[in-house]
Length: 331
Ligand code: 13P
Ligand code: SF4
Image (cartoon, rainbow, N blue to C red; front, top):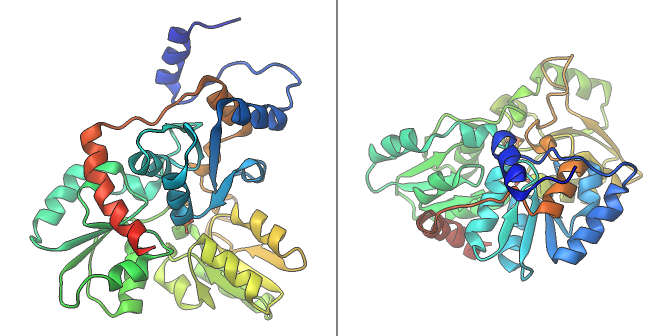
C-alpha cells in the first residue's frame, strides 16, 4: 500500500521514526549503499552503533571526529547514525545541509539530565563563570555555554581557560570529577550522568581483573570515580581504540558501551576484549539503548524518505554555534 506524504508525516509525528513496510527479501545493505549514492548522502556513525551500521559509514568515529567530519561535509545530506545531540551538532555547524536521523527518540541520559530552564537558573548564580559543556547536551544548553568539549579534547579545553577563573562544567559529573583531578582546577559541577557508564560494577570488575591478571583495564571517563581509579588507561572511544592498538598487552577489560568492541576486534584481531561487567547480571546494561534504536531498517527508510529530519531555529543555531566553533578551533 502506497502512503501519501501526509500519511508518512503523520506516522512520523506519532512515533519519531518511520515504521513503513520494507519490500520482502530486500538486501538492506545494498539498498542503503544505493540510496546513499543516489541521494548524495554522507553517513556519519558513532562507534556505539550496531556493527552492520558501522560498516556502512563514510565517517566512523567519536563525538569530536564526527563533529569535525560534519563541518566538512560538502554533500547535500548528512544521515547521522548516532544519538540526537550528535545530529543536532552536525546541523548547527553545517546548517545548510539536510540532517536526518533514523530515530528521533535516540536521546541520551546525560543530555536529558540537564534541562535548559534549570541549567539557566544554575549558571545565573555564578555571573562571569566560564560555562564548559560536554557535547552530550541539547542545542539549548550549548547556546548557554562559553565553550563545548568532548572527552577527546576536554583537558585541552579546560587548559585554554585562564587560571583563577570560575569554571562551571556540565552535564557529566563523572567526567567533571576526572577533569578536576587531572587539571587541579576547581570546577562547579552539574549533577548529571550516563546510565550506561554508571552501570559498571566496581566489585565485579575487580573480580574479573583477578581472573585475568594479564588483562589491562580501560575505561571511558563517564564511568564513576571508583572505576576510573583502577583503570590502566582512561579515554574517549577513539582514545581507547588507539590505546589497545599501541599497547603491548594482549587482553583488555573494556568499560564503555559494547559497540566499541567491533572496531577493537577489527583493528586488533589477535587481541582479546572483555566487556566490563555491570551491576545487574541479568541485563545488557553496557549497551546504550538510545544508540541501539537505530537499525538497518530505520536507516534504510530514513534515507528513502529523507525523514526524520533534525530541524532547529536559525536563532538557536546561531547561539549554539559559537561555543562549538571555539572548541573546533582548539582541535
Ligand atoms: P566519545 O566522544 O568518547 O565517543 O563518547 C560519546 C559518548 O556518548 C560516550 O558515552
Ligand atoms: Fe548518552 Fe551514555 Fe548513550 Fe553516550 S552511552 S549516548 S552518554 S546515554
